[in-house]
Length: 370
Image (cartoon, rainbow, N blue to C red; front, side, top):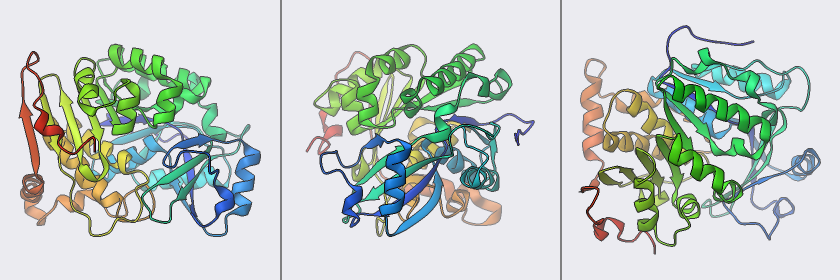
């Protein structure tokens, strides 16, 4: 059931293929009070069955971090592909058909044996500010090196890999093989830290990867602080400048920081009338950023594209866009670029330019560590 397009891809994404099951927070039997809200916890099949049976109100959607990013890139009009494992069962077919419907090339055959398709149970807090994920990886954990080949990677402009793959040895090996192929063929490597607890579990490996093979790093503030053992974001950013070509740290309602070797940009968030669900906001930001980068945009404008995508994402339940994102960039059919430029210009941006040997201007960090 492999679906491969013959032309080159803007971005090939590698990650856990999961069905997302959203559960209302008043199902208190689903929540372990000793766990940290807003984090991801791995569960086994038995625990997944308990969650499934105890949840009274459920919404079932397709998800998975890198898969969400691939869908976002395609929604902007980019050529996106995805490598991840699902089983040839009801949920696996649902996932596969959804990816194809969203114009994402699915580069992995469905499994006819082994675990069932993985599921991500998402508990949304009553104030809708936090979502805690309980993930049964299932078939996603069976992604392996045989699912990755040179022809799937070498013609892409960018390879995007999620850190969650390090939680299982098979999937980690698949990710590392994809990265090695990308490095061999001059494909830019983008990597997302995924979750602060994931960073804690694999910090040494992530640091080695980021300093040696990653060109573009994504994470949120908590993940950045955890990775670089920092208390203040300023310190994490100084270290990030010494590692990757570009680092992107999302800051929730405070926007995002875009860091390259010589510049730091603070992107203010696009205003949203009502925040419904923040699940996948980082995935959406990565989609906008990587789409822009694949089209030759400057990092500051890529950040603005990310802001557009994440603003749409938090306005509804679920981690994939409900509208065609390219439509947000169109003013009239013959003059879509004008609308894109208008949107980019309207999004307020604070820019600090600096040389490598200069100290970072503290004003760009105002309010970030409150």
